[in-house]
Amino acid sequence: MSDAREALADVQRRLAACKRCPKMVGPVVQGRPNLSRIYLVGQAPGPHEGEKGRPFAWTAGKQLFKWFATLGVDEETFRSQAFMSAVARCFPGKAKASGDRKPDADEIVACRTFMDEEVKLLKPKLIIPVGGLAIEQILGGKSALADVVGRTVEVAVAGVTCDAVALPHPSGASTWHKMEPGKTLLTKALKVLGAHPVWRETFAD
Image (tube, rainbow, N blue to C red; front, top):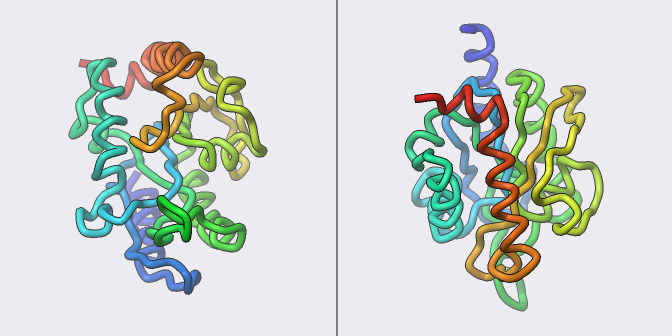
């Protein structure tokens, strides 16, 4: 256990010092180094997460933790028991049109090495990809949200086989989870998540 903790701390030190992507605004945002069997993956930090020093620390995070609260898990409990990751760990900057810039292919590849190291160390049994980009990376290809949200999918990430339960992005800019079929599928996804044995074991009273 101590060896895994030290190895994970080493990954986080190297990630904190990473300067691979010159277009990224930064800074690097990381979750707590929890040795957890639950691995959550977002897209990338927003403009406020760097200041707050933790992932999902602004509007999207408030919505995400409201969803988890329906399963009896509050924000602090989740942050202390699960591992929170992202496809890209730095704020990519604003898009020319509107919203945040999506990480480009090179940035995704550069940051993927850290994700793979984390997964190999943690060997999670449950991965929660949040939003289209994270779902694409974890499931290995683009999928319509309606085809993947609301069910359990077996995936292999960095040679580790586990279950994935996808969630839509909780951003206020997204309306998918507020309209049908997204509203119904989100409810179904949360039920699937709450019933998963690893979720139940991790957040047992």
